[in-house]
Length: 422
Image (tube, rainbow, N blue to C red; front, side):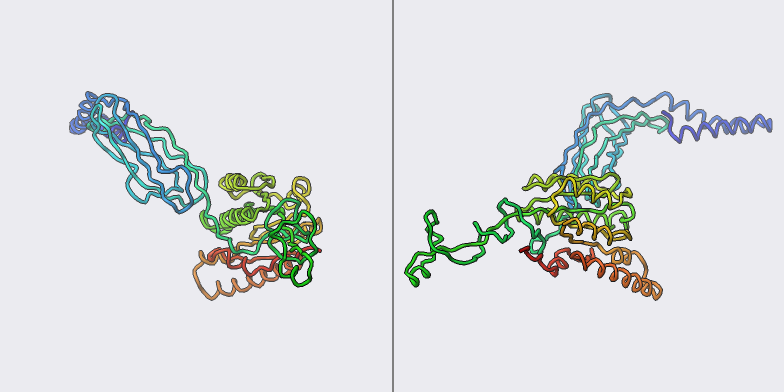
């Protein structure tokens, strides 16, 4: 294949020849001889197709946004010697090169090996492919090239950052028959003391209240409130209108972080968690327990990108048919949709408890707008409108207004615990 230099020399020679024909001057023919001679000499040493085998090794194939991964690319020339070989390991734009290089121009003799080592740092969650390794062999005059591929692409999964919500007061108030960490109104195995009663056959010895038994001259046993588990459904608004901000810092990406943190916190409390995502498609994960459920939710959240315009009415339809009616619905949305208050009221009317975690679009956008008097006035007006919206929602649901520049655990700690149903 010809290079731009070869094409330029051919065009220059042709122009000189045309000028010689047009002007009938032999000087232009002499000028055309130089590029023609250069091209003729280069054709005597054509490049050969590179026969190079490559192996790429990653220090890990799953990591978190902001973490580093080391890549080692080893190439071995299994063909004739290559005087000038250009190597490029293709990278997606979301993976920043922080150390080393993925591009080199070397001389690679036959049978020799070469290693490239570099470090990548992802800026956005997702599933990426590093590679393939593209090769280009050039002749000594760089007039012709032959392309090849050495190493196949290597997959890399980048997970979102998880919010630390270990001390957050977020959990279901309605419980199921399964054992968990939520104190219920029913008596049974647990840690919360409820009272004492007379001893009956079968009571455990460690449950006997020896002080009360000695004082009342009868044997009494302690009774505890049973601890059960409940259901939580995370509803993530990832529609196109919710992507307020930049490609890496927008309300959808912050919502993914919040959803993963809530799922980990609720599952650690031995409750069931389900997930519904509003994006190009309505994607959902049925409620389940355990660490495997967290990995299922994580796999779905990794592929979330802003898009679609699914209304809340479709979400209500899925909730009512595939999820329990007494679950706690955690809506994560910037609330840019004007129909959000009516949709939340409808969910409450269907029997769901609703908690809203709203990444503030004002806090996100203000970081991208230069300060000024007009900007401050516009921000105060929009802040008043948003506060009125949140006040309206607080009549039917618990609402957390979250500035993504701060940890989510701070506003969640100020949220009141759900009252236990009688």
